[in-house]
Amino acid sequence: MWLSLLERQGIAVGWDELVTGYDFGLLTQAEIQDWLLAHGPLAPKALAALEARELFEAALWEASREATGKVPRPGGHRWGAAQDRWRLALLRDVMEAPLTAEALAVAVETIYEKVGCPEDMLGLWTRGCPWEKRAPVADRSAIERFIQDRNGIGVAP
Image 1 (cartoon, helix red, strand yellow):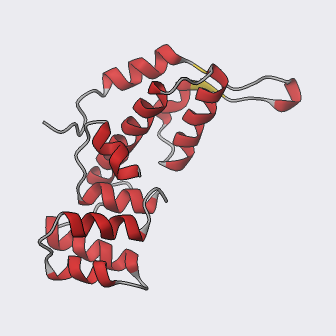
Image 2 (image 1 turned 90 degrees about the vertical axis):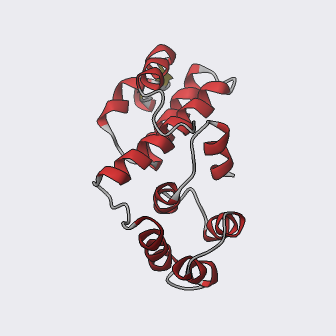
Image 3 (image 1 turned 180 degrees about the horizontal axis):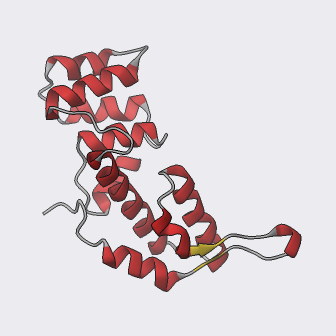
């Protein structure tokens, strides 16, 4: 499901997206294994990830290292780039949905919490405040500018 969202948003899926998507809790072991089967032939470490029952994350990292020479790590350049691609795909997707300002705010906050806490997203919505009876509100124009400013990040040619 999540990999098809990336593809639908024009973002190429690769090892970095698999590793970060798994870490963010967006991708399951089964989804990654299905992707591996669909994008073979498989090198030995990828075959091990395909067969892994336990220690799947370690097998995934080894397969990524085998395929790309490195593994994206939190705080690293490749990790940050993959994180940006996930954020953009998710934001584009929610902007296409017919959501109220309140529902959009909840969706943006969920994205923020799910794929990391980049400070550059803080101006995209205002959090609700139940004790003040204030609902969360999204700033559609800020979200559109955010997406436009990052247009082309990871987009497939």
